[in-house]
Length: 400
View 1 (cartoon, rainbow, N blue to C red):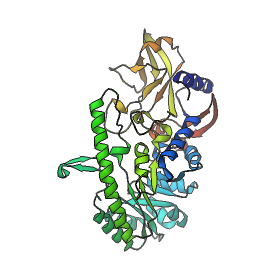
View 2 (view 1 turned 90 degrees about the vertical axis):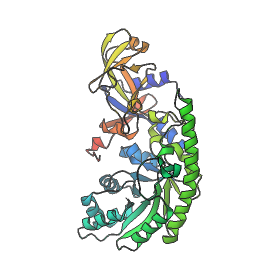
View 3 (view 1 turned 45 degrees about the vertical axis):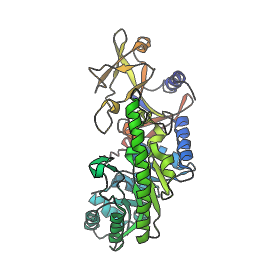
View 4 (view 1 turned 180 degrees about the horizontal axis):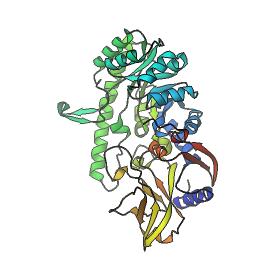
């Protein structure tokens, strides 16, 4: 693995002919991260979370590798677009209210065979039926299990507020209702344990909080493994030919893969390794997706100003949602300005070695959200740009 200084020199050489701002993906790091996900999955296929990639060329690249199978999408419009582009196994991870999309899905046998939709409420089936517009294709359905950890008799909840289906009996009841309804077929079960897979457990300078997170996650994994196994048994009693049980996320791949009830793992952020994934004891990846902002001002000693950079990530607001200045090492935000919409001052002794026109390389807090800021990703191998791939945005697709 190269040193940060060597990587900076490589990226500067590779993109010297390009004007910043720009974004790149280091293909060597991307491929190494893909190999690590497969290793941690222990023989179970990894379904790629498209929201964390948002670039068709890179989705195709990773799915061509052994150990990867299928896409986990985030909107119905995206699912249909990907299926029409040749991706044959697309699991929509979130319920949809896209009536036009459901009409298209129900009218096209190829689409209906390729796309599986998420359901956790009978009202969602009713919406699909109202939207069919005469389309009679059978809709593939996945049920979602609520994975949150409940403590103190349910008075404390740890985990995302997603599905209302927590108990195995609830899932079995919905499976029976879907199976009895013409035009639908239950094919899968999903549970995303974001409080384990998406929360770092080794926070710099916060040992007590880190220990508390590890204790919580240990308890959550144990509780969920037992409840998920019971839920799968309950659903299989109704749907013996259930095709898949999806679970996990980048931060919990090996733990979720160890559950016998789980047949496939979902992951995507682990390919780019954004800054939110620096604080994990379960794995260590290589930053693969970066963006560069040009130095346009030198206001004084120990400070430079770059153009733009105000790309906060979604989620609860906080400093951890901001991009982080990465190369050269040692730069930090001015606390009075932070990451600015049009200009971003950066402080630190490395600023004195930067000239007008030089680049500062940043890492986004999340993975795919970077692609909503750039039309293209420059794909780097060694010290050369070997290809330029459009992001979803570059293809005119802004699904959310």
